[in-house]
Length: 243
Image (cartoon, rainbow, N blue to C red; front, top):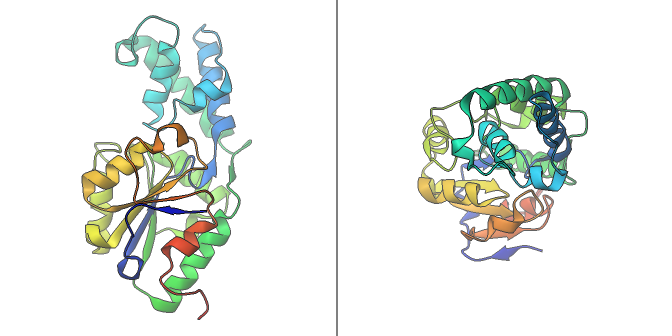
């Protein structure tokens, strides 16, 4: 069931931008396995999966920093740089090989994307894209591997621009490429990072309470919150599909 805090003018939307981890896909197990493999590689103890999953959202380098900082008495920004470099390099290599071991699209995602594409084909004027803080190569590989890449004009990652979400650079770039204004754009994601990037770019925001970040999603309330991907079609369609 969705909750509306500020109605999105869906009839005027031209650009739908999706987060990836915790929004389109459940990648938690593969991320946790990769982080723990990297921790083992540098001689650190592994961490519980729920703890690692809670560190997701600000990009892979920060994910590794947070894992290395846990229990060490230092903050993530004070982690030894040589240690971070070794652990992060191993994490990236391991994750590239294992990114689809357990990762899957959430229930209703493919159907919702197909319905939203059908609306685009019927009415025209809309584009869909992915903007994630995950490195772009594995992000693109996952979208291709799960059969959803074809729905998106672009799949941009945390290394596609000089900055990551919540900096608005990536979202503004997508708006420029598609000719959409902030009023015509909605950012769809599962954490406060996605709401913050929407606010920073002046766009609408749709929060996904089923993802990785429900514990912080409401710290900066999105305009609309849904409990399943299946609700995207209802919330983002100005007309009934097929009418």
